[in-house]
View 1: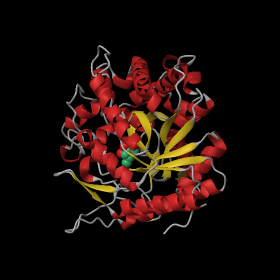
View 2 (view 1 turned 120 degrees about the vertical axis):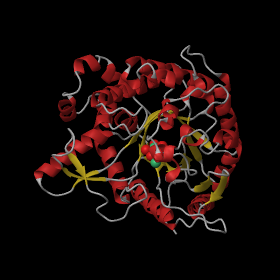
View 3 (view 1 turned 30 degrees about the vertical axis):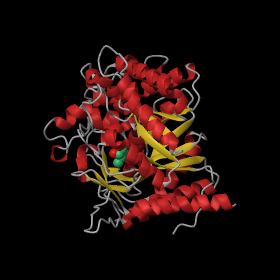
View 4 (view 1 turned 135 degrees about the horizontal axis):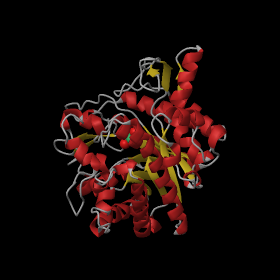
Length: 453
Ligand code: FCB
């Protein structure tokens, strides 16, 4: 069992996202998002899985909050489904959509669980996808309108806002690699989308400040540590490119008000910067935020690969030999290295780990047990790495485990289980995994220690 202690004010939570858990895709005025469209098109997801029902959380939210209360978490990070709030092109706000989140917030409040709300966890309304999605600069404006509607309606109840979840995935997996909605394979589009996503973040933060809202606002990036596979110069350069693509493309504009020049040079084959980036954009994107959310799952070990696309980066698969069901290397030390680097190179603002967790091949035994010792070990080692950073004075304020429960893992459908709680999707039964009990104990022990101090 762990013997490291986090400060009493440190927050431990769980995280989810709307399309991955809610289901009820046609209820109370919600219209489709581009993820509904994408998941319903053949070949895009594992076995054609969709989020139509997912964890049926829309109907089961109260008992799901009950699970969180039993876990003892301090905080819950969830996302709001944009097409529930603004379902149609006429821009009208759908009260029934807002009411769902009001009920959820009520339930959380009753159990003293702090909400952290993500505005965009990838479910763009289809009516906006029909207008070009994130390729269209106007969509960044529409995002701001949506953000303002939500700030006005729920602002007094939400202490923590996150504009975007992992814009790298929205832009590069969605418009470049085609693995996520809308499934395009066009690097020109991907780069344009990344800029508009960042711009919409800046505009939403400006709008938040203009409303003089209480609470804090930030953004969540998926970040990694990139190691070169060998000492040769070509591999070191590949590592630099990979870092530019995964990390600096987002961190530099947010914290330094410019895009990294090496990447600008690389991307110039696809876009004209003068057309894309208008004069005030970079100042907007670098608008001060209150914290940075970090989603960390694995590191990258890369080499120069002339056969790869324009980036010329090849990936070594889990050199240390330990990996999760996603094929991602288990590398807790890189979480520590990542946090150190962020603080040294980019910001002394509070950091939150807004997602960390792992998929393993969980099996339900006949007597309703899930022995996921690997997940317990994974979390324990990553908590330890985070603790090392905090113990050295690092400004890390909280940790959200991905995820509360098994859910729709995007293109992998229901084939990858990340939950602390097992979901039997046929019956919607929730079953505590060993890791959930471990987390519950970890939190309980912490409470006891801090109250006896
Ligand atoms: C992240 C996503 C989250 C979940 C985890 C496993 O990239 O933000 O929704 O799918 O990966």
